[in-house]
Length: 194
Ligand code: HEC
Image 1 (cartoon, rainbow, N blue to C red):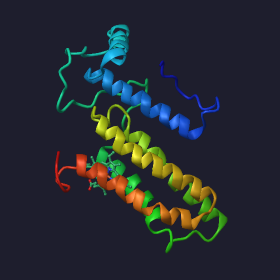
Image 2 (image 1 turned 90 degrees about the vertical axis):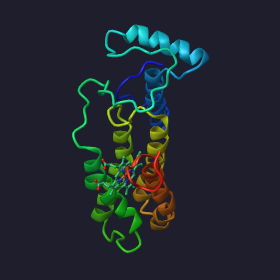
Image 3 (image 1 turned 135 degrees about the horizontal axis):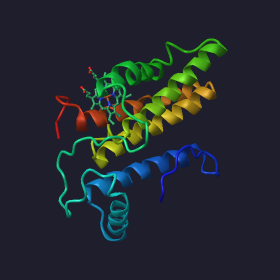
């Protein structure tokens, strides 16, 4: 499973591409933490051996790291620009409002619908930004939580393309859950802490 960049054709479709990306990132997390078993662990070890020149740390036996530091982004040239708080406040929070308030802020012209398409696309893609190795905090739970946002954002994008207000409204609960689940798990001082 050699990650390639920019591949988007080949019949997998947008969902397939998204799944591939998640798998790839989860695989990286496993490889870094060394928690794989059986064939996965062997494959991970081989990958680590091959990549050892590029890795600052090699696997420490099977010891899980409780609080791993974010790793630098392994995609050449990719790097974080905003902090986690910036992403939330500047992008994810306002973009999600466009869906939460769809019934009172319904687009009334084709240009407003186009703008909403862009907003929902941004929301969906922001989940991928959360999955960047330097943001993912090395935890599979994080990837699972970000995937919820990816899925609901993607659904909202397609609903916006269809100008389907009812479908967007129906996504509200799912969207809300995607925020709350990650915040419960990872946002300091939010509900119960991990
Ligand atoms: C995969 C994890 C994840 C998801 C999904 C997520 N968040 Fe967050 N969010 C965080 C973390 C972590 C913080 C704490 C950031 C900090 O303070 O550094 C945070 C903080 C915030 C904040 C406060 C930021 C500040 O500095 O005041 C807002 C607002 C927010 N999120 C909105 C949302 C909304 C709205 C959604 C859903 C549409 C969402 N988040 C989904 C992880 C997530």
